Image (cartoon, rainbow, N blue to C red):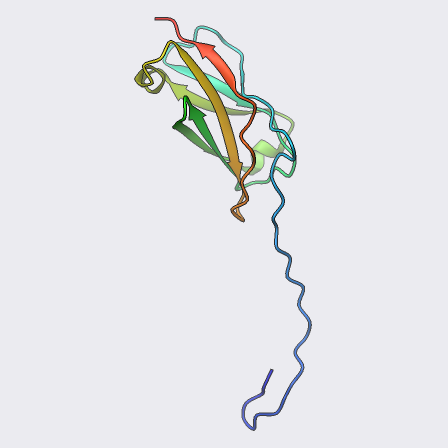
Length: 126
């Protein structure tokens, strides 16, 4: 670094910069779990924790390839309980399909993206 005034060279302290490129969930994200069959106006999907999970991560759901609800991980989600994502009946019916394949992907605050989670296929009955 060059100091001012006078243009004298000055050594600055060394600073460690760490770039996080760690893929979330490691090699595998667990499939979303659904505990109830008759869901009324909303279907609750439960997502268990994953490797490198942190507050601020974003879970983006995909239903038949269409973006579904997005969930942001909070500090309260870091406990040993599954996160709950709600899918409205209107959204699910708008997919106009007798079966819905659901998956999700996680993005951390650094922008690192996980692989897609193992998909789950549900049958819709009217």
